[in-house]
Image 1: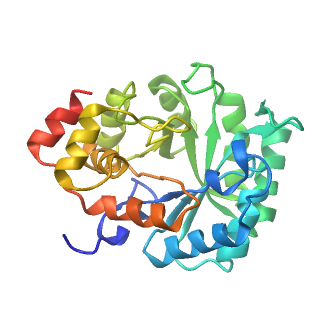
Image 2: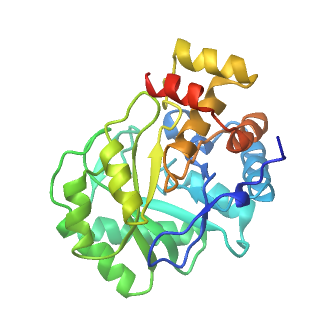
Image 3: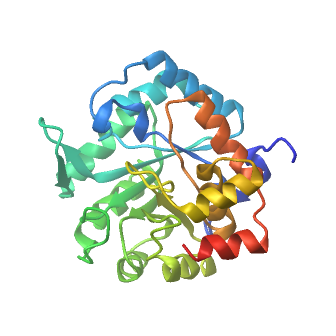
Length: 288
């Protein structure tokens, strides 16, 4: 097995100036417990970000409602001025209450405020990609996105956003959004055990649009499967590495963004990109 570099494996969305290394990094875990407040080890968080970039990751997923503000401020501390080719993908549509609750925030003014918060805390002149996070806890509720998306389109026309993506959406919402603007990525919940988006992934692949699974390893309850454990043992790797490798082999438009505060876990996640699952392993995993 060669020493894997994320830059070995790239995806460029249609009609887009960005080229993503398919192994990315999700910054949500850089905040404190329950994605609230500062981390216990800020220097450690900075070190993880810097090593991620040195190891070839060029795609960081974040949001200013992580913390809130904390995660973006750590990214700025660790990586600003940003190297050429680094893509920062943020999201809007929610805010955090003083009790750490998650509150929908998709009015025109709330979205404008969120974009300016991201610009300030990341110290950017324009945001590479802004995902509109649609309502719903973990699955799309199917409501129209037109009013909220119109605000992001205006901000794009003003030069504050370069590209627009969607999060927590279904195929109908994607189609609605595409009638208003180009969509470069969709970020939904998807992993070995939660595959409601199989048809959507294939539809987006045909259009050369990136699909980014959040909770790729199960989220706050990590994936548990005897089959996953057995396949990992046969390959002498850990189950989470196999779960990431499965996603990367599922479709060429899938970008993975596993998050961690640990340098050891970061290295394991990156190494997962070099795993090749044979037909027998894939068949077993597909049966989960």
